[in-house]
Length: 103
Image (cartoon, rainbow, N blue to C red):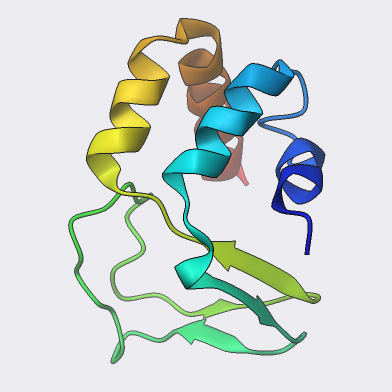
């Protein structure tokens, strides 16, 4: 799988220069890169992991894939450092979060 191609297709990252995508790629080793089929339960209220990670408050909810889904994790500290150097991307995240909360 070409992780860079998938990263560039994520709406949050589509405007990032290739150098930024490469940095994200380096932060997310392929050791935790899984393809899940449609209908896979990623989380239930009983399986919430409570890991200290970048999260949108998913404790107590169900998360199910709506199509084939690729999951890749990144350490919170690395991603926060990455975002702190890219305020436009951080603002885009806030807008996406706001839109999700409205829905």
